[in-house]
Length: 158
Length: 211
Image (tube, rainbow over all chains, first blue to last red; front, side, top):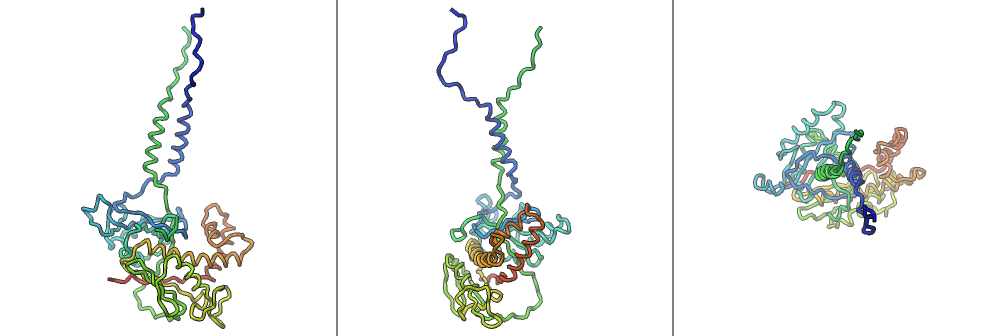
């Protein structure tokens, strides 16, 4: 008669969760590296259209973003349902585009100014009218390199 | 008294902390979509420009209306076209090569219809849109036109430089890749410029009509 009972055999041993933190850390590092923290808080709808003849934008060259779309649900009371332009964090009028580009240029080193690309992030349901006005303003301020930012996909099924 | 070993730190909650961080990054992540159709705007010029005379048969005029329909005017008549047909129609027009004598087109493989474009240098695609056209239609048309140019450029690039074993679009991608060697880049640039010169994108956009 032993004092110590033999351990009962049978029943599954618990699964070791010791490596769980490692797995989670791995995922964490992936997301930390892949993350670009949102630069602008969008006040407008911005569903980009799709296209397949796309080129990647060079991240080493300066890029400025102009967003166009209908104000999102929270802002309809304040701004109505017409298409609007967003520069940085504010909804602005077409007139402000030139000063926005000037401000963006002022932030850059002088030799980089001619390489500035304007990325136009336009909602796919927006009308062309406002975009045309913006393009005219960009021409006036001599910001001629533009990029219609799109997702990858079939353009015809937009 | 026996020497006590330092108590082990409980690492059980490490996973929780990591999960918390993970969820934070998951929520704030916005994997960047910085790719799109690159275009160049014409410079602003207030001075009166002399009218350039272009033969009507060398113009492939597209007009988008407020109902997102595409009207194609080419070779004297107009018709509505579907987006699906646009690319093949554009290639047919660009590649036609109807010119004779000094206007003859060596690269063209088209039907040589005298009613359509003379050669690749002369063929102009023009696009006009209404202020009420949807952006998605506009992008689709831009995309199809670019696709037509890219297809012809691909064909000519492969024909001119068969030993590179890649087409124009792949070459552009390689040229833009940061990992590509500078020497390779310089050689590529030369070839890309030659193709761009042989098949220029003569793509003009009129100002949107006022309603």
